[in-house]
Length: 317
Image 1: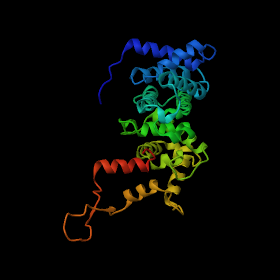
Image 2: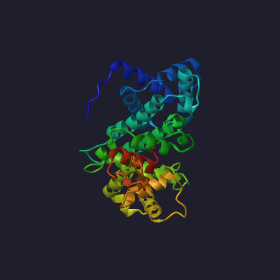
Image 3: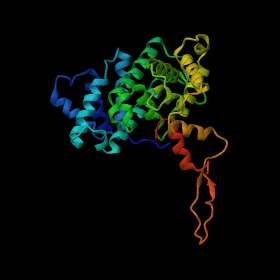
């Protein structure tokens, strides 16, 4: 993994920005609010999620964090309007959405690192409560930013769905890193918080717009959850534990066959599970005589095509 080089001046700037935002200091100050919105136009820098993770951790340890979804929604709206003169998804360049997705994924990774305790004892009740508060706050922020991520339909979904999508699409699969060889304290807390939010959404339809379905189809998230489940003794002791219930419901949904497979999403799923590849007609050979077109299989191991299919299955295409 490439080691990030941080800009201390930028980091200090965004540290103060996020302190104001999380504490609500800019709610009654339009000039400060506009300044903060302008600083969210381009947040590609690694210093930004690092500063936000530090603020969330500090505020969570100091006490409860106020609801942040509406605050970040207003800031993102203002940033889009200032940068592009519009808030319409189809008129905004993709880099703007990608920056917010990277911001969410990177902040989550840094929170996991902040709260993990790989060599010492388990988290105290106060530390566990702080970790839960920080993760819940980030999911609330994801809800506020849901109109400004790559997939337009996420604007009508939940914060946990938005966060899972951002992490699933991240270049670095940090979920497998934090769960290997055995997940530690912060990862177990995240798994519980994630399960609570997914189960709180009553939508259990097997469609891309469902956070439950997205989790069930995401290889990254399912592998992470199962690793945390295996490492957590309490998950086995309490059948009503959120993570235990979520994995049980996912297993049941996978074994139930829908009456109608709705569209390309399930076509892609069937392709991955099938033993034989679908076929398509090849070009008709140039000849004076007519003859039936030859058929050649799509190479099932074609990496670009397989990646596309996996993205369709996970709801990321």
